[in-house]
Length: 397
Ligand SMILES: *Cc1c(COP(=O)(O)O)cnc(C)c1O
Image (cartoon, rainbow, N blue to C red):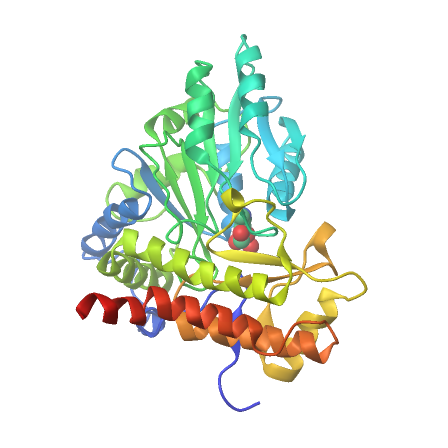
């Protein structure tokens, strides 16, 4: 098919040209004397994306899943109790990993479409006077359902209970797209990955770890080797790595962080909110609904859209790809066949979103799903005009 394909899955996301070109380099010497002059400032600048001064950044050659493993194996011991809510495929897999690592996971099942149940967490933490919970795990943005949870509220519940557990946050599909405040929210470990808000290929697990969590590596009994923080700390201190680092990915990270900081993180978050709001207007105009059950859960990086009974969202996603070269996200697990997802994060603008909406609309109509021609595109494009160009013209007049 001539022309560009539309990549609107919630990761991997579109990679900006500056990031792609940053990777097109001759191979470098990972022990070169001048490598630290590149890596040490990079570690510092990545911390800005997490909004942390206190935490230490770790870059592991892995995907986000490896970041989960690094977080738990460096701080916990087999049998440790952790608290986690399950409300989508990613929180489900994280809970599964806890169990596979021999943790005693207290898993709270929540209807898919809602997020972390702060009230239930608050009750459990308050009644845990013996402080059996060693960590509270929060999936900031559940990518399967398009639901964002309130991390600050979980921190508040922990503080009100006077609970000393660690706070782990999976921010793989929110960091660098939705506001995240490591220090202010008292997050102990934040796990992210390269292929979502960082606009890079998959291949780096990007973590920030608080001093409190780092101190636990001395007592944590869980088996670890490749992901050992200690080995990283000893070599990162001088700007090097305990094994061959993927330098092209580090160069890409440098370019991505430069783009994010040049735009300004708050502008990045506002852009994601506005683009997402346009998508939500389109969903309403189609007469469809989001999986996210209330506006407070709406994700600014991904929308999971429920289609009418009697249609198959898997067939829809396949058709959109085959006919229009448009990649949409499938419904995962419980949402298989029932919902499709539009990923709206990363290197993205208004007209790119309209491409995703136009393609979704055409594909739905092709399959007989009753949405009015042009309705979603009209709603989103008018919203973008009113809040963008039209608003700017009005202000200038
Ligand atoms: C993408 C994602 C992950 C990690 O997935 P990988 O494929 O291992 O990078 C974890 N959590 C969430 C919420 C995600 O969106």
